[in-house]
Image (cartoon, rainbow, N blue to C red; front, side, top):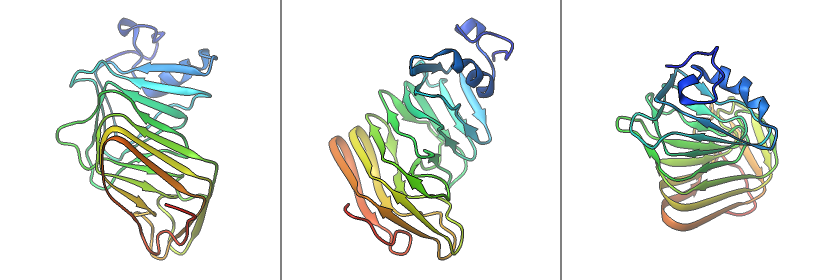
Length: 219
């Protein structure tokens, strides 16, 4: 539902597409903006709007308040998700962070029928400079991977910075340092460290993948 000619200020005047919503975010200049999801957003591949500040993506907490995609989705600013269900329909697709910070606040739910939910820190197939933080206060995640994902075959990528992961209510099956999507002989070096804190919730296996991550300062 929605119409991109609307102003997007209320549920009754919602816009239809994320592109239209992104254009209206420019009006929020105080460094914080909230994008309310009414009903279900489905796109084959989702790129959330860029915003010069912290963007909150918020549903209404119902099962019909849903982000659904075939090929995963990507954030383009520091982003908080809350009161929303998430469904990725194609296996081995992920939530890409593009170098930005991510928070799963209250009531982020893996929707029934979704494939595995994997969060991928770092940037896609490119070098990165800077720290990154992931905070998970809710949700059931299959894996967090850290490194420049989709590294080209024979290429070497570096990340100069540190990764912080705080699990405070979520359930995460595993953490992998390295690019599980790398092409043959793709390489990754982390010039920094990974700090993982489990305050509540759970974390299963933690490991670095030989070859996919050549070196790191500390894990």
